[in-house]
Length: 107
Image (tube, rainbow, N blue to C red):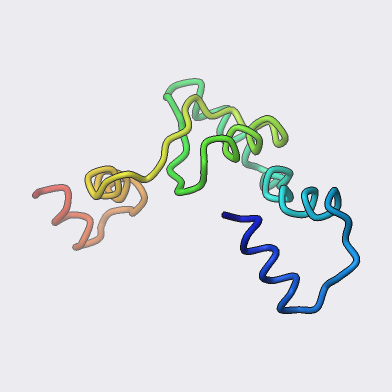
């Protein structure tokens, strides 16, 4: 899927002359993203007390490669697969006092 989009963008912007190997390398740039400066340390501290994981709509292979490349210490990789998962996650991504969060917590 990502390669298809990359090919369309290269054509749209008139980028030519890349070899197949260069195009593959560019397409896999997502797999080589550096984590934010404090991410590994922060996640490691959290992991000492909790199971930590991703909540993402990208494929598991990409998440694994990002973890390996950047030293990200998450325990599990998960995909957004249901409204229930999203609702449970929202409970922990907003801080109270917040009327909307309070109403979710009490529902």
